[in-house]
Image 1 (cartoon, rainbow, N blue to C red):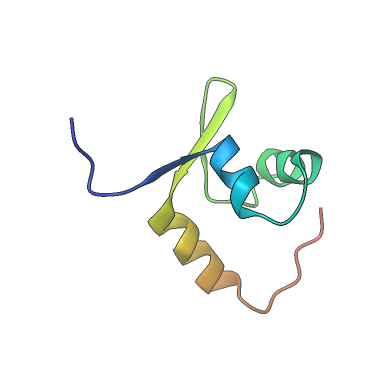
Image 2: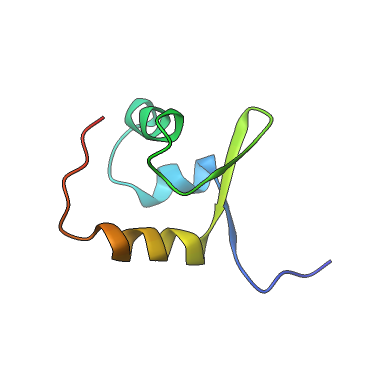
Length: 63
C-alpha cells in the first residue's frame, strides 16, 4: 500500500521539535498537537503538522 503523504511517529516528532520527550508527551496528552492515538503511540502526517504550524504561528502555547 502506498500513501501520498508522510506519516510521522512520536520518534519523528522528537527529532523535529527543539525540546525533550517530557514536553512532547505533555503536548500530546493535552491534545495540543494534531495527532491520532493508536494504542499507546501517536502519529500524524507532515501535511497536518504543517497546517497546525501555520494556524498557530505567533501564538504562545504553555504546557
